Image (cartoon, rainbow, N blue to C red; front, side, top):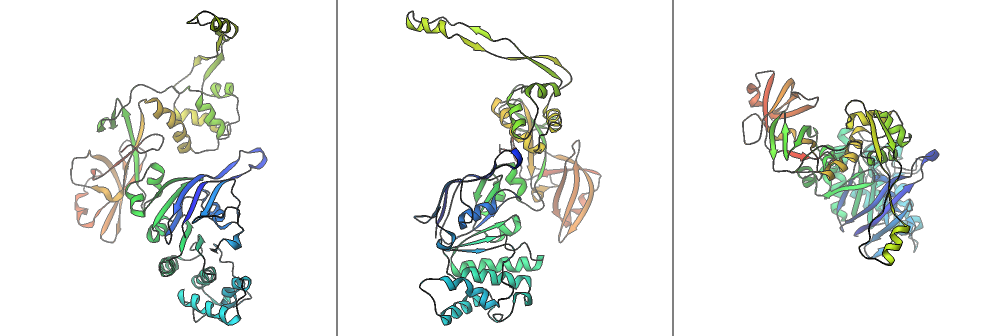
Length: 466
């Protein structure tokens, strides 16, 4: 069954006057029939909310949910043809495995005979490899076996769509690995469209046909797992996917060239001049993030006294005489502007962030940099950029890409590879460089040069440049 989300949104009212929480915001994507899809993202990104809207447990604020050609937005959960597996399994402790599996079948119409229900229970139990446990109680089962009972119960009604809410989070590492392989096998055997929620990228990468990467209720990328890893659309996706995480360090875009430690790292881009950090739109960003000061408070905190001048009345000469001239005199244009009177020290993103945090701003520096970065990119100004290199994409051998000087802190041995843990010289960023163990002898000095075989460039707003 194909599942389509059409401009789907879910907003929750803020607590005690706080802004509305946009748990899911204008989500659009289609899940093809018979595919296994992972909703991946950090805690609070809207994954479970999306799943519960598909299940019918949450009513959307806006948008539509389609199962094939059927609009199920307002259809009750029991009539959607879905199977739902909760994070905590939700098994009835006083029921046997058989009773837990057959319980959803008791309300099926036309009513099933007891023998039919038991036959179905045996079939789905065999499918999830617990066919010999039907007479046990949940307390007599391991965590992995309980998870299989929950999946068997969800499959007992032959659902068109199977929904799994972080199904492996309560299992230990060995059971997680084993159970995720079982989920993939079951999905392939049943060919049921399956959507599962996880914050574990390895879990999503290993069994998904494709991944939906979410952040703050917004979809950032939908692609096959390897594509998401190798071709991230922005800095967030690049940082979220990968273990160890991608290495990010600072570059500078100046006069169209990316500089690292003053040396040209890349050229052919466009930039010129400085950005005006007294742009009043930054105040709007601060307010949206919880800053509770007035505009005058904001500018004062930056060491700038901004005084609003009297409106300047500008009377424009009409191009043609007559009625246009008459109305031009009746409604002259008025212009307001704020003029800086005192400037103390340099104003930049860091100093602005420090000032607004003291006034109640709740977002991280990275979030603030991303929001204001949109204005800086729009202005085409010289600016900071981020250079990204996957740990396995380094070599100690010189190539066409510029060298990066790193200070070696220590070396980790993992299998046949070694990981050099180091600091980028002149920066606060710690990076990891994975190389074959046989190249260990090349790491002789405290400061060495490493060369990226491939690198990414990200703008200050998080968008990908290269």
